[in-house]
Image (tube, rainbow, N blue to C red; front, side, top):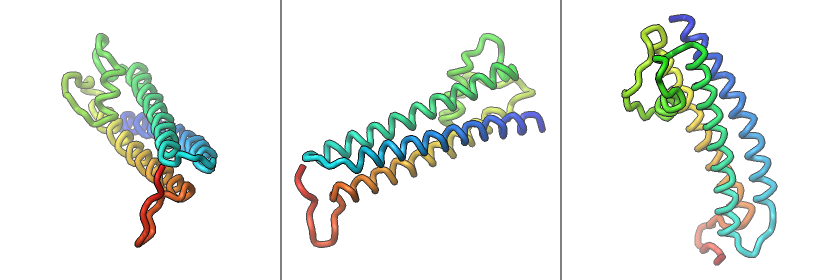
Length: 151
């Protein structure tokens, strides 16, 4: 059981590091894009948010690939198992249950799910901050008694 925890912690730390790197990149891109002046602030805001979300989604996909590769290395499931699908189901906490790990690695799914929940929450926080900062810069935040400018 200790080996499962060690492997799970190692992969989680690698994924957290990857997510931290992507966070820095996504925030830098969003900050530079968000600071541009535009005649269409709402359209600009949509573009910034879409770009930030896509970058974060790509990060999540790489993190899932890391789990799938780990499953392969430790042989966490039967030989004919689609490990990428298994990693997606665990990471997203979807939990279909149609694939189960071998007995020696039965904790790998919950460890993957813990990592996914943490990183999805982190991504939501990043998206909220990018939205807040971009709205603030574009002057689209609504002060009491005022209305939003038209795009």
